[in-house]
Length: 145
Image 1 (cartoon, helix red, strand yellow):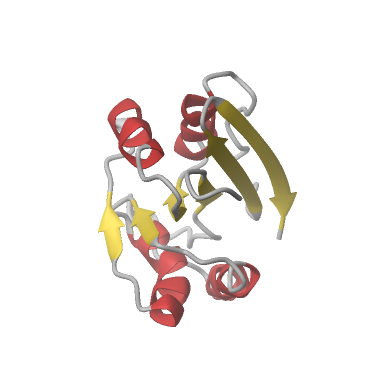
Image 2 (cartoon, rainbow, N blue to C red):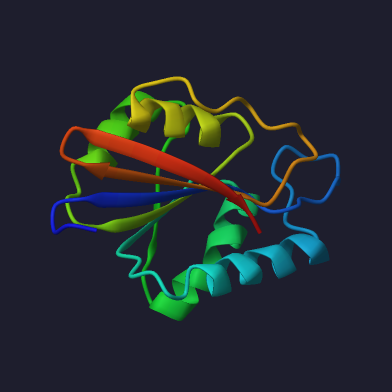
């Protein structure tokens, strides 16, 4: 990675409880997946952590926030254009963004400037999209964890 390239790690929140509310917390499995994400990214030099304001996204980001001692910053998943522009300007940084089944692939597409990812099925967890922006070159890869 060059000095001016930006790497953005995009992940949907981990498994959430079905508690009948609009803002459920993570399940036991979800908390384990959040810890697994932190371990997976432990070799990366994360500089910024962003999450929407929902319990499930915040709880997914907490293990890596505690490990790196980086505060979780909120973003509005309904204003992805503005947010994509904001984080793509953070040159030379490694950024984690925790989102949702619709906002995570949409944000990846905005950052890439092309339609590459589709909305996740509601039962689909554990996808990590890595977007690297270096000058005019934008590439991505998706892995499972």
